[in-house]
Structures are given as C-alpha cells and as structure tokens.
Length: 77
Image (cartoon, rainbow, N blue to C red; front, side, top):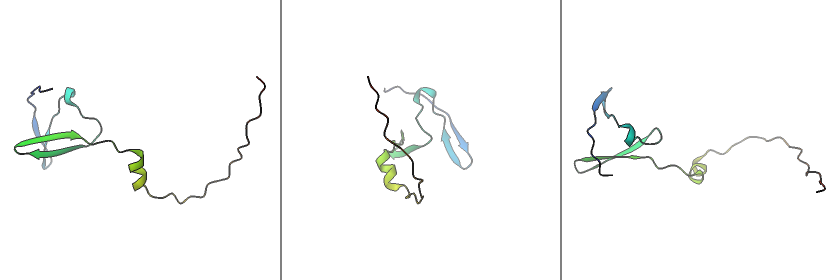
C-alpha cells in the first residue's frame, strides 16, 4: 500500500481542501488530520462503541407506560 498518487488542492471558503481519490475514500463524514514533520496524515475517526456513547448520553427523564405482557400459552408438540 505504498502507492503514490498526485491529488488536487482547492479552496473551500477560507480553508484549503484536498480531493481524495475514490480508491482512498475514508468511511464516515469526519477524519483526523495531523502533521508529522512536513507530512500531513489523514485517517478515519475511530468508531465510537455503544458503551462510550452511553457514558456521554443524557439520562432519559420519561415515564413509560405499563405494558401487559403475559407469558405465552403452552403449545403441545
């Protein structure tokens, strides 16, 4: 995966942007960019686990209705 490809740079408002070729497309709608010396590294944002999301979620302050849920009837096999 040491393939080299020349890409286009362009302006998007006051930001500089890079066109990423389809074969290098990243998942999602966000990425992380960092500088290593004169090199820019662009990588996908790691997926958030359900436990991480639940740790930051606001508590639900709702009253839930009672649900009539009797056990299933026995069936002869």
